[in-house]
Length: 59
Image (tube, rainbow, N blue to C red; front, side, top):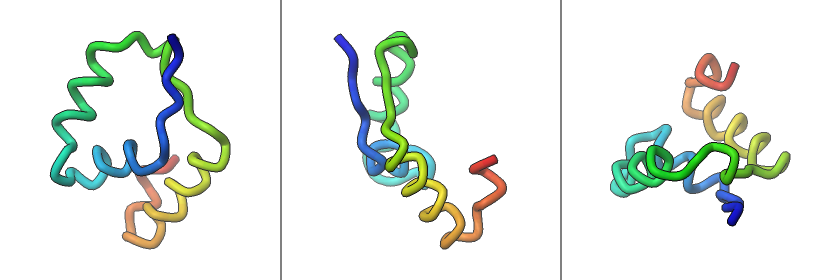
């Protein structure tokens, strides 16, 4: 099964929000070949990081 993760899932982890540990645990248990992200989500994450002054984390 392939999981398409929304940008909010990734941002939860990147910003160390309330459910960051759940996301971390999920990413550690699922093979990376089964995890996907849309191009739109990639851009959304880049914008969110830039607005937070963390654009260096996007590179």
